[in-house]
Image (cartoon, rainbow, N blue to C red; front, side):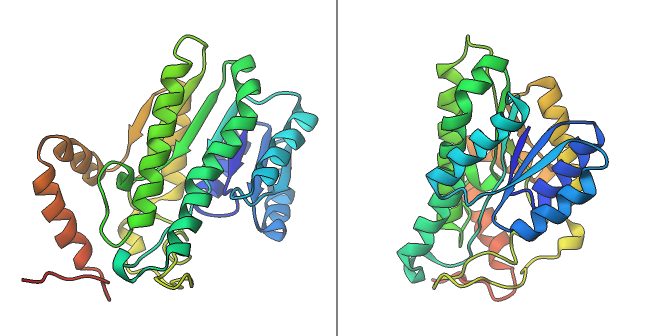
Length: 265
């Protein structure tokens, strides 16, 4: 099993859960120090390797797949979890921010999936894309984030159809708001990190609970999972009454402290 973005949040929680279940893990992230600490801790439960990977770089993704196959001889599951967020109005945003999000969130998923696909087809395995409710309904102040998550969903939905009769399992996984480091590391209009979260993390689903849902989705080979009551309601209503969800999302996100947008006449 390969997990990208494994050094924190959902990726780390998933690594810990699957290690406890005895999975053989290949963990990828940019921070080599964090990865090595995680491997030393989880190595007592399962066979684990760390591969320093910047998923926005094609060669890093190719290396991740090659190192995994060299060690384990096969790939059964690829969890494309590495992700980056943002918080800024598009009109104020440097285009390099949008490109960075697409490079990490979309191209990282494409690169890893491309090189893992032959092995996943051979094993009848699973490829997962961790997206967001923002991949179903546009999230104001997060144009680059929503765009990248929509793109991942479209990519994986198409991949599923292409391999409908090949035994490949493809799952789009949308956790909703989850307590993690993603908002602290979110990029602002000029590309600098936000440094703090604008939301109450204590009221969100924990990364550990999300990992449990992820494991369930893999076990049942689900095509799509949307978590949290708010997330499910947003996706369902948006399909039928998109104008309503536009207004609700605007009002909901505008209530954030220091929101980059507000209602104007």
